[in-house]
Length: 80
Length: 250
Image (cartoon, rainbow over the protein chains, first blue to last red):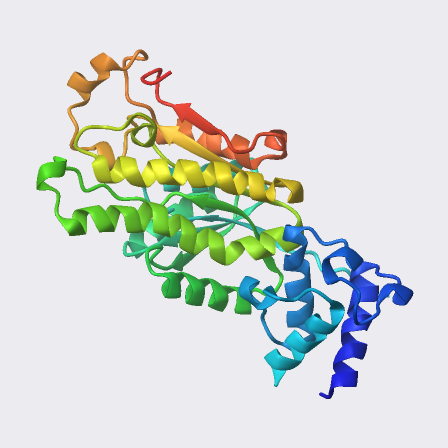
């Protein structure tokens, strides 16, 4: 899966499951604020990533993940 | 339109084959719609006997073997079970497995300390940590931790057991605050002297003199309290330690 496909897939489930407006999803948007995530909501993100990409994220994986771009990069690293 | 799959809801009772755990299995079968997942470590016959009693009470259940002290055993058994029960969801966790290795602290061997801590405290971690994500995703759950009056007041001869149960009480309070937002309650039940294998060697005649109710409790009485905490009636009770001890520590 190339970078563009990852971005497309992530954006699709964020719109679908987290009710994020497509217009709000720029790569430099803050992940936590855009998705309105509190600490518990990360579990939903973990489940969404697992069912869409077959990889399980753990808490430590989110260290340093600030923006949507960081999140795309994280998934790319995990599935490569 | 896709047909909505109705999930089979389960209540997992660790150490469910005997004593209070077995009574909890039966009570939940009687009072709730939950299928009972009866955990045992070594005594398969006792687990099967509990299952039979669950069925006699009008419920359904399954026995599942794992050692709560071994995180790999917990994970592999529960994952294997989930793999063949794709429509099942564990909504209730009763962390009941526990052992005692009593003795004066000055004579206590490292194994007696570690085994008791591993079963009560690490057992709570291994099972609950493995299942909590699913409860969070489902936005509903009930966790009841079986502790003891020992963990509240401290009993001479039970430094290990008191330490383990005291730690579980603290964990109950902290975890309850973490997950309350997702309709998951976490409570602890602290029995005093209850008739079971664990108290079989105690001098009931002598000990009951210090219990205001003047008797040992029955496992069924503890089970009824657990059943209430598991029910929807207890939705707003979380982070609590409920004593059930005939007035011994009030």
